[in-house]
Length: 155
Image 1 (tube, rainbow, N blue to C red):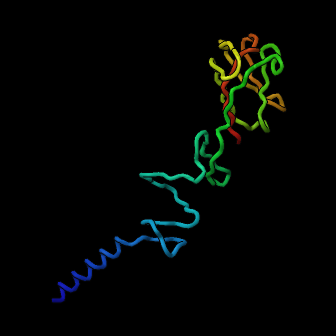
Image 2 (cartoon, one colour; image 1 turned 180 degrees about the vertical axis):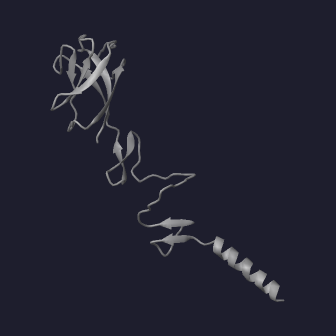
Image 3 (cartoon, rainbow, N blue to C red; image 1 turned 60 degrees about the vertical axis):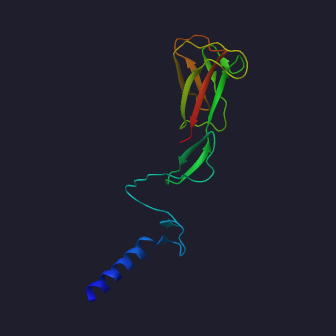
């Protein structure tokens, strides 16, 4: 009789243990594991990843110096080199709060949304002037009337 009673207790305990939700920082977890607060781990293996709220179109997931994640609008735009923002083979970018620590990714744009533009078939580079970022044609070809796709990542 005792072995059957022990087996029945083991089955009941096992069923109860696997059907419970576990909570850390909460007394009423609604998921298998629910944590209220921060988690620190060396390795995390996820089958499904749910990201912080406020995700949306044209947003990128970034993190601060402490590793806290958040969503920011994609800092990309089309820069059109005109006679007013260019001089010879150099055009100056205009965007909010340019810093020397910004990372810039620049490509040629053949089909700008606003106004006519020619394809810039010159090799290009970027440099910091001390107050602004510029795009320049490395072979000194005229840059006005060309458009560029610009992605700025703040550091």
